[in-house]
Structure formats: C-alpha cells, structure tokens
Length: 423
Image (cartoon, rainbow, N blue to C red; front, top):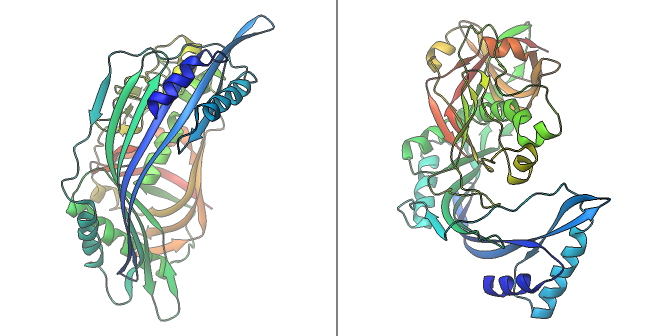
C-alpha cells in the first residue's frame, strides 16, 4: 500500500510535500474476571496516517499548511486522489508560518529485542504472579494484560524512510477489598518495557496494599502542614509540568519569560535537579517528523540548559530540533525512601492531578487517597488537597535513591515536597 500512496502523492499537483506513517500493531491480550481467565485475543492491525503539505502566500507571507487523513484499507486510485485533493484544500486554510520538512538520510531501521516469551504465555505468568499475592477478601476483580509489538514506518517526500519496532506491556488492574461494612476498589494502570518478575510481584503487593488503605481511609484531621511524598506516575507528572514551559511551542508563544541559563532552583537546601529527555529505548530512533533522536538535557543542576520539541517550532526559533522524545529521565537522588518516611509525612497513593504555575509560585493537587505517618502510626486518609510555594519546594527538594522505569519516565521513584499546606 505504501507504494500506491507514494505514487499517488508524488503525482498530486495540489501539494508541495507529503509524509506517510504506517502503524502496524501485533498484540496479545488476556482478560481475567474474578481471577479467572475469561478471554484471550490476538490483534493484528495496520493503519496509515497521511499528511499533505501545501506552501502558499498569504498577503505576502509564506505559509505551510498541512492536513492529515487516515486509511485502514486500500482505496482505488481515484478514491485516493480525491482524498489527497480534499486534504490539500484543507491544508490551504492552515496559515502556519513557513517551515521545511525534515530531510532524510539513508534508509534505516531499528528493532527492540523481544521479551523472550510467547506473548500469551508471558501474560499468563504475570497474572499468576499477581494472583499469588491475593487473599479471599483481597483480590483482583479485574486484570487485563496487553503485550504489544508496534512497528512505525515513516516515509516522506524529503527522503525519510525509517522503520522502528518496539515492544510494550500494559496492565489494567482493579484490586478490591471486601470488608465487613462495604467493598472498595481501585484502578491501577501499569506499564513495563522489560520482563522482571520481582517488579511484577512488588506492583501486585502495592496495588493490594493501596486498596486496603482505601477501605481503611478516614477524613484527615488536625493536620495543617506536612511533608508530602509523591511516587511513580505523580513524580513523572510533576517533572512533565515543570519543563512544559521550555518546549519550543511554549517559547515561541512566549508562555514564559525564562531563557536558557536561568535557574529554576534558588538557594538550594535540598537536591539539584537534572531533567533530560531521551528516546524510549535504543530502538526509538526517530520521531514522526523523521528527526533522528538523541538525549538532551532540559534542566542541568537546576539551570535551563536547552529547549525541546518538534521540527516545526524548532525552525521558528532557529534551533536544530531535538525531536519529540518520549521519556523524561531524571538523575538518582541522595535520599533513601526509608529516610524520607522516618519523620511525619503524607504519602500520596492517588492524586487527581498536580498543578504548577511558576508565575504565581504555586504547586498543589487534590488528593483522593494517602497515608499519613504521625511519627508513630500510619493512618490512611482521603478527601483533601495540598498546596505550597513551588520555589520553596524546588529549593528543599528531596529525591529518592530508589529508581523506577515506567512508560514515559526513568528516574527517582519517590520525591518529597517539604512543608505543604493541607486543605
């Protein structure tokens, strides 16, 4: 089908450039209900996203418009030509400042090593690990496991012809606790890029501990300030929010007044931050524009070192674009988790989202579930918010030595925010 697309796009006089994304997915899926296997499914799909580009002048200003359409099945040559012309017309209405498509090098491909198991066999082994940690009143109501082999092939009118194959595992789990008074559940979404049965076991235990805490949770009382510990996805989210203003898009639209060389950490009493962006794996060789990827430091020891982002906005800033990098990588911290939690604190289990506003110096979030340690005992608590001054938080930041690898993040598993107001 790619040959047909290239032929039709190359013949189209209504466009000045094009890019084809071929997305192929082979997936194995296993669905357990009340810890019994209900269904397995094998999926094999191939879809195409075609982007057409059209350069034109608008009141003397050169523009590059673009429009994308999707195909999941083969069309006749006439149908395809009609689709291209419709997209070309749509592109003529998009008045983006002119930019060039990424030039290609030689034809290249990347492959991530497979997990080493037949997919459904691996999913069954992982399910057994999860179920081994359960009890009669503490179990997984639902466990859905996904093993995916994803191949992205990008071809463009500028000579890009790259292909990469990557592997991923995801789990959607609903642990439940049956108590005397009622039954409670939690939702957990877990991601893996390697096979490690110790990690699977620990994640199963944590999910069951968390739902037990939810059953036992009460409204928080008599706590006006506390150190707050975040973990896993919430740590990733904090760092993602923290560097959001330094993307090419944000810089171009003047969403921040900070520039390279400015510090985001002042009067540091805790630990300096180094935040990088990197490919998801060695096989993640390029992005969807065809930029060849390599790691880049955004924050280096608390100082803005680089902006980051896509081809289009990199050109607008006159910067050689680093591309769309999938993973935030943060250096290991100096504090052990054991040391972090030996003083009174709140450890967040479920957070509805974290908000950061560097201009109003705000950081905060709404907490659905946490565990409060008063110095002697642990108390599951829920239904409150925390807030504080982001500058003070960054000054006194503590990062754990313990590391975690999840989808989109490699770095400290835990992070402590000092002296938060509890609302």
